[in-house]
Length: 212
Length: 181
Image (cartoon, rainbow over all chains, first blue to last red; front, side, top):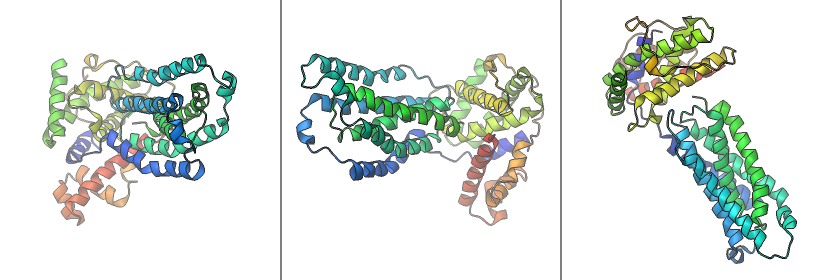
């Protein structure tokens, strides 16, 4: 085919309006959310002392940290799906959840508590945490990657990794309502391992699925 | 060159606003530059440059299918260059070379033979015949037989809307097939 013929053909398709990447990702995540919520409700459920726990700042911090991770990652993944776009300060916002967690750890260690810091770090839920967060995040990750295919990332592995952060953050936010380990030391250890695994999975999948 | 690129940005804005003629002018204007970029990339990677037109067409398809990722408030040049570079590196990798091509900015790549008649390419043709029948018929009618959407609809006894959908899907399938290793 002549390039001129191809150009004429592309121009004939000029009226086509594609869905913006952000919308595609949002729709896909909303579609997959019931699967993750079903896993949560059927296998985990909200912890029995949820209302009392809400008065514990360390409990509340878990939601703040995981939501900060998910939102800052959204802010990175969308410009990444625009070729030639500059990221500006956005990648630095990913440090916000880390800083919040760091402040939490300092507070946790400086406050006198019944259990030693190693006991708090090891907690009682680590195995559930390591299974539940990836299990709830995986449907979201598949959805996010499908949505991101609408975009055009020139760094597909990086985009996939950031998608892993979004979904890990969202899944961890929901999981936090079940988890009775509130110490930031526990969160920094076990939540991070689960989310790191998702990030790696996202990078591997992204490098194949998100090429332009 | 700077003037040329801002002209492209203007044409692309008109295209996004629905002006198909401006879009066609834009794609014609960028093709020689893409061709020169592809030739140079192939030559530097030690590849024969006769596969150049395949790369140009693959870039044009990517530009078309991903144009909603261009921000109309931003200049068109960096966006186009990022896609072109990505596609070029991808193609060279697919040919089994681990390459790190240093590709110049457009400013350095003035088209070597600006008015050279656009050459034909093989890869799109190969994949065209492998499209699902409806998409293939529509793309062929428009690309090869130079039919308009309306003429294609009459010829294939389809509604114009169905022709538009089949055309877009056909182009998306072609791009996906070109991307396969």
